[in-house]
Length: 50
Image (cartoon, rainbow, N blue to C red; front, side):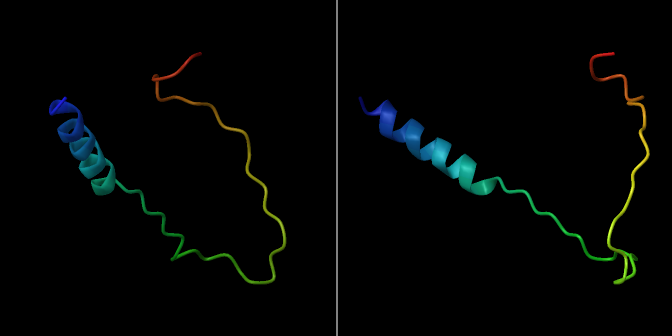
């Protein structure tokens, strides 16, 4: 029974240490642009299904 609280604390510490940050600064899109278009592209990484 003493292992359960220790395990819970370790898992909480691991989750608190992990975070993801996104940064969308540095873009050069003009302010008057209302829509954009992205052409289709093929996944050539070789890490997924064909």
